[in-house]
Length: 109
Image 1 (tube, one colour):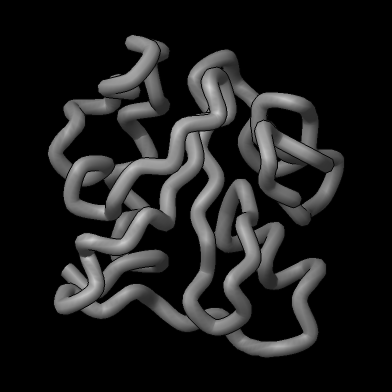
Image 2 (image 1 turned 90 degrees about the vertical axis):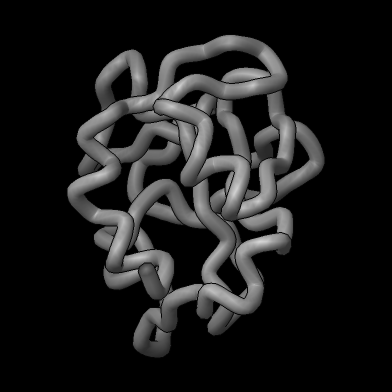
């Protein structure tokens, strides 16, 4: 699925990055995995589609633009995403606050 200028891979990905695993109104974030440089809506999509194990972003790279808002297509740095209080700073769309429970699957925190 193309979102803005980015390919987002996964299972049943829609135009705002929702997938078969996470598909509420607020599930509009995709994360670029450092192992492959590809955006996925969630870790389960990476596990289902990629042919390699996922790796996490190290804290030293939190200034990288690796988080995509599916609502407006803005790329956020990891630091901005982690500090945004579940709201896109570019368009104001609410992100799923429950994603904080999985942050350690994507980032070394």
